[in-house]
Picture 1 (cartoon, helix red, strand yellow):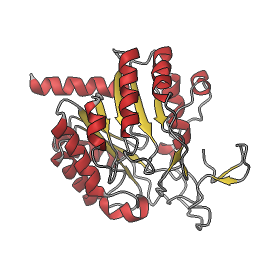
Picture 2: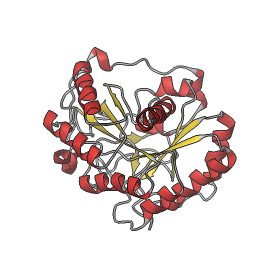
Picture 3: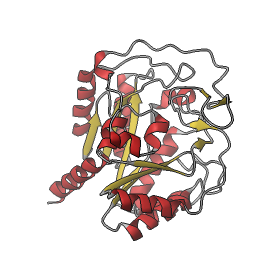
Length: 310
């Protein structure tokens, strides 16, 4: 999706991002060769409907053709309006009580060995959707006991007890993305709080040290190199296992502009530094996305932990 106005649904010309419609256009520089990907045209792309389409992921054709799926629960409308995100914003509808079972059934039918569950922000709910996450995890466990589960959650800001509900359901990987460096939060992620997100990841490990934790940031939003290195230190202080770093891509001209396309050699440099800081795994490249190769990465995470323990 790369449009601000929705001309497809039953209500024509409904703003996809009403808070962005009146913003002046922000222009990004032309994409360099290293950021270009082929348009998806495989059968796998046509057969699945997941968050990948909503978020405009550049790896959509590759992952869908491999039957790697990330499901977005709790609707397609987010209560926040982050400057980088292309998911619709507005007031969401009521939760679908049957959704956890539907996700479990889809996981079974697709034969998924590893599944990623993410969601929109649901600040309208008393628990931010924590119990819905937990129910979805339990439903998948019941139908597909050998499937490993990764979740990519919102921050549950000001939702007391929400995190504990999700962690108690025991996902295999708990992912919560910082998205950017703290100095860019006001412009890029205004509804969130950087140190709250770091603390949330730290709290997961305190509750259940066996769960792998994961977080990611985008670069090209105006951050400085020393700020990225500080994020690494903050995440390691929270005992985060897995770091992802990818290039920000502007969904529409109403979204935050790309300030810079970071070349591949700088991503490689970030990866090398991150490993020296103690992360079990690091994925840093222009096309790295939070859930890209999630199943393969989970196997590598387990092997890395076993190597240290052994």
